[in-house]
Amino acid sequence: MNKQLGSLFLALALCLGLAIPARAAELSDVPADHWAYQQISRCVQDGIVSGYSDGAFKPGNPVSYGAFSIMLARAFYASELAGYSDQGTAAGEAIMNKHGILNDTSRSSASIGASLPREDMAQVMYNILVDKGAKIPADTEYVKCISSISDFQSINPNCRRAVMVCYTTGLLGGQSDGSFGPKNPMNRAQGCVVINRLRDYMGNSGTTAPVEPPVDPVDPSEPPEVTDGPLFKMLDGENAQQMMDRINASTTYREGYLTNGKPITEENIKELLAKFEQTMPTGSPWDDSSIFNYQSRAFGHTSACASFGAAISDSLFGKDAPVTRHQNFDQLKVGDVVWLKNTSTGYYHAVVVTSMTPPAGYGANNYTICDGNNDESWNSAGGVRWGKAEDRDAFDLPEIASGTYIYSRY
Image (cartoon, rainbow, N blue to C red; front, side, top):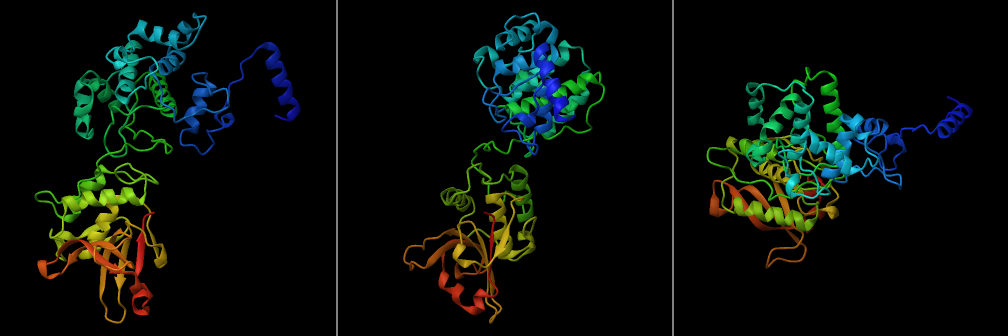
């Protein structure tokens, strides 16, 4: 369409009072490379949701019970909504109440403006399936998904059947760490995603679902949930690989954040390292035997001191965090793994920086480390050690500088 025809169409539309659907491209904060661009575009074009007066969509804003009610009314009860002179959130919730869509949710004890948690999102989707007569899997089908939901017992009992049905039909999925996150609030972008899934499922007469439930998208702009972090300790019967498999399965890499959900800062890294020291203190076994081998995505096959360093690093930043290998020794940071090598003697050892300040009694040019497979006299078989000093002056020695590398996850 050339500019003249486009202008003519716009003028006719305005004269005739036609509604011209917005596109996500017209929303200032939803660029074409936004993770939910297509889903938001579809809902905006279909009139299910709109942007704000300032031209933004604010995809990361939480969805309230009222806001989601009017979105659902526009998507699934449009003819009824047309009968309301004021087609705001009150009308949407009135329609939801008429059809029992908010039944078994926490709406009765929460305000209309309260954020909608994921478990209630599942419940309202399930209630719409029932109200619209869509196909619902048999009990024998949906109960199979229980084992794949690591936090199933944390889901409100009223909502558990709804969550299982939504999992089985592919309407909702787990988070990247294998949990469902029932209390986590849904945001506007995620609301568009699940409404489109529900429309597609019902538009196909509810007869076709994905073979596996999808992993629900995570808005990169949302900070992750803050937790206590992984349990850095070999449980009974575990070797190092099994310990890290457990830790890696329970943590997720998010750019700019540690595995406990806190931003990457020196203070937060020290806090997490202090917890690791409590659960695997000085003197804990960690030697060069095969039970301490660890295959790390970032570091490859590691053993002895190198596997300890890789395990600490992955537990801090996440197994999928990118790693940078460099020799800019003035850029050493807390949490870095240092591969020390003396090219003249052949000595090598991996350590993890725990503080840029020295331990008590050492000079200002020392930094503090922890390591594994340490052969100090207190543990001739090799073990874990915290609080040792390393001298930065060693980086000035040619035989050290040439073979030594820093592995950073910042």
